[in-house]
Length: 260
Ligand SMILES: Nc1ncnc2c1ncn2[C@@H]1O[C@H](COP(=O)(O)OP(=O)(O)OP(=O)(O)O)[C@@H](O)[C@H]1O
Ligand SMILES: [Mg+2]
Image (cartoon, rainbow, N blue to C red; front, side, top):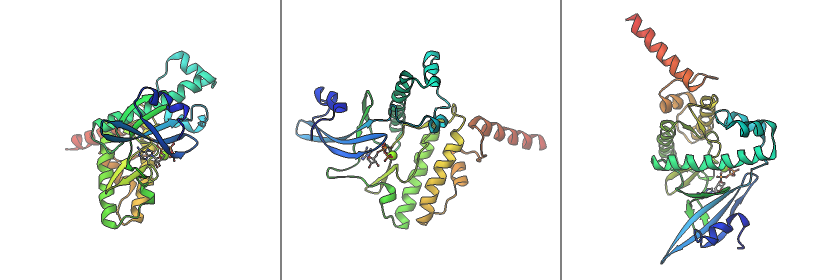
C-alpha cells in the first residue's frame, strides 16, 4: 500500500521496511500492520497513529486528565481550549500510552512491546498472524476452562497495573486480545495514576464491572468488589480517592488495635 504521511518518517529512517495494510481505522486512531526486514528475518509491528489531537471530547476527558500536572502557560491554554492547548493535550495522550506500555512491559505485563514513539505514532509488536490480528476477547468463544485461565491471567496483570499505580481506565473485552491461550491488554492512552487522579478508584471499579460482566457470562464466578480487593488489597468505597481508602484502612486497623 502507499505510505501514509504519518508513517513516512518510519520508512525514511528504515525503522519500518514496508507498510503492509491498515488493520483498523477509527475516530481516535488508525492501526497499520508494518514489516521490518532484518537480514533474513521479518518482524511485524503495529503502528498506531493517534488522530484524536483535536477531536476528543473535552468534557468526557476531564475525569482522566484530573491528575495531570501541567505547566502554567499550558494549563491556561488548555483551560481556554486554544488550538495550542488542544495540540499539547493530544500529544500527552500519545506520550501517556507509550509510557504506560513501557512501564507495564518492563514489569512483565501482557502488553505489546513498545518499540518507539514518533510524533503521534506508537510502534509496538503485532499480536496475531501475518494474515489476521489476534481476535478481541469479546470475539473469542472460550470454554469455561479457557475463560477461567484468561480471568486468572487478567487478575495477575491488573495486580501489576496496581503495583505501578496504573489503572487502565477503558478496560473491556474490546481492549483485550486473545492469542494462543494468552491475553494481551491494549489501548492505554487514557490510563490514569492511582495516586494522583481522584477518579482512579472509580475508574478501576468501572473497569472491573466491565470484565466481570464478560467473565460471569462464561461461567467464572466473580464480582467487581471481590476483584477490587484482590487487586488493591483494600475494600472498594465509591467516590473515594486511593488516599481515602488507605486512610480508612489505617483507621480501622488502629480502631482494632485500641480495642485490644
Ligand atoms: N499490538 C497490536 N497487535 C494486533 N492488533 C492490534 C494491536 N493494537 C491494536 N490492534 C488492533 O487494532 C484495534 C484498535 O486498537 P486500539 O484499541 O488500540 O485503538 P482505538 O483507537 O482505541 O480503537 P477502538 O476505538 O476500536 O478501541 C484493536 O481492537 C486490534 O484489533
Ligand atoms: Mg480500543
